[in-house]
Structures are given as C-alpha cells and as structure tokens.
Length: 153
Image (cartoon, rainbow, N blue to C red; front, side, top):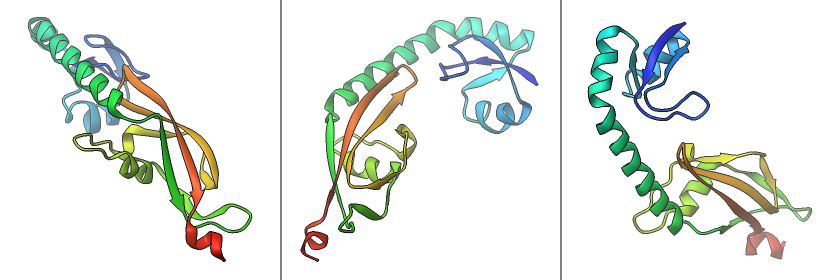
C-alpha cells in the first residue's frame, strides 16, 4: 500500500487534499500518471498546500461545466433495435450505444460516463446513471423499442 494526496475528488476514494492509502499499482498506473494524485511525502505536502486554492477553483469550475452539460441532456432517450417477436434484442444495448444516442450539439458523453446497472437485452424501459463529475450525476430513462423492420416480420 502507498499513501497519496488526492488532487481531485475521486468517487469511492476521497476528496481533494485527502491523504489515502491505495494499492501500489492503482497509484502508479492510474492516479499519478493521470495527475489525480501525488505521493504523500513531506515535500509534496508543502507543494499541495501552496496549490490547494488553485486546485479547489479548478474543481469548482469543472463542477459548473458538468452541471451545465447535464442540464442539456434529456431525461429520456429512445433507442431502436432489431428484436424478436417476444421482445428479445438481437445483441444488447451498451453504455457506448447510450453515449452515442446522447450526442447533442456540443455535448460529448463517453461510455465511461454512462453507468448501466443491468444488461439491456430486451425491449422496454431502463434506468441508467450519467456521471460527468464525481459530484455531478443524473438518472436517465432509456426506452428500447423494436425497429420497424422487425415489426413487419
């Protein structure tokens, strides 16, 4: 285990400036290279205290941008897929499919921002969560319908 100081809020881990113990690989391969954390040494603690206000301002700005984006995302999206007579889809609807369906003008939602709780393999209505920032999220309805071609058969 290694101690790191978080440079931004990370869900299920901690807030800005919090010193947390994480596994070595997580710190070396994800947190430190992506500038989400620094090693918790005396030197880095002093460096963080000097940068704290700047990092908090940046975080507040990120929250504001994420909130504005979230307001533009609709509450419900329809996705049309090929399906059998019983309503079983030929394939499934994934987070990537939902992210593509959300694409509106200037809003980019990536597949990692979409949290699908259950596998979508049938026609119907499902709940997903859109997380644009650890502090900004929204529940959304996904309505999966049969395509016209599969209705004819």
